[in-house]
Image (tube, rainbow, N blue to C red; front, side, top):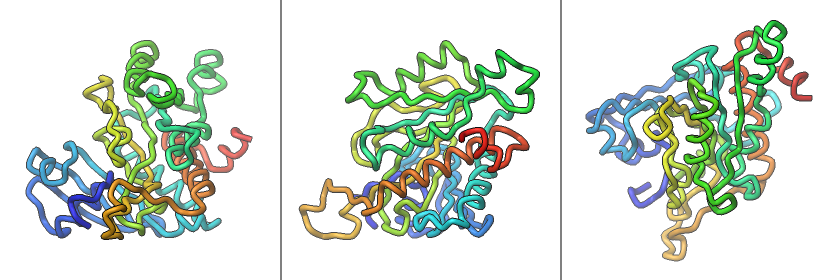
Length: 280
């Protein structure tokens, strides 16, 4: 991997620099429910400059079982991802806005919109029947679409919604780009530094972050495309991105995993069986 390869993954950026100690960067890895977790904390501007990412924490959950969609891996993956989400979420029990970023009509970019479909929207229920839904946290979900379809930046839509709804925090789900085939559809990255939609494929849009929206943003992303330049020296590979043959199934499976993990993280005591029942 070289600096010319596009990647949204902090772990890959660190690997590109040798994977050793870096000024302004702290890294650790461990196992969680059979999944490999890599955490990269960018502590200051020195680390930000080296990894070309904002200061913050970047946590990746990886396992081939995610890409292979092993039947037994879903529950463990959702619980593991929920655990990591809880660690990074600044507010527990407060109103959360889940934003499914991306283009629902373009499969590799549909992770966010599809994940939002699995999120339990409870804000209206808690307002109408507070006693009946006392055990659930207030949550609302939004699919802002993309600039090419709406003429509105996702960040602009979210800023307007935040002004009206006033969430305590945002969970933004989006597709990412990777530089390694091993990461493709088999890694989920969490970051409390927000996200710039489209940055992995060179189509940067307005940032979705605390700085632009005024509330903490926890970004959740899955690499669904790989920079072709990462495995080809052909000049024609520059600017091209590769996606797996079974991208439809992979995206739907990962979107469901993320949606369920968000539900588990936000609603204490909820189980996967409960979510199955509520979303049926």
